[in-house]
Length: 113
Image (cartoon, rainbow, N blue to C red):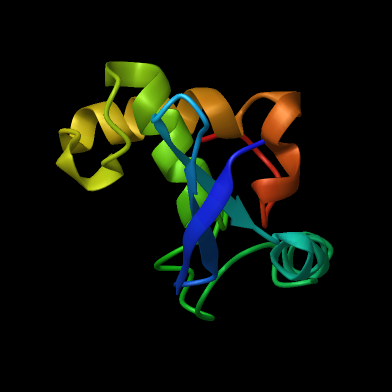
């Protein structure tokens, strides 16, 4: 285990910069998502079925932590910049991930995207 050189906090993400004994730098990101998952569960079970307004113009379907978006972007193209991905690719990734059982706890309403 290397020596922690710095720790940053940004938008709920804790980043550790670790200097390894071989000279390499390891960057470790952490995010506690327990409160977000609890909120998602409450919203999922809410009687509004995810509708944001009574007019049913917009539906809230998911809440995904920023660190997870970075991981999904990295899986797609090797870069962790979610917002650099084209919108159609973002939609494709979201649809695939959020319709799977693996990521169902990010959903805030039932149904498929």
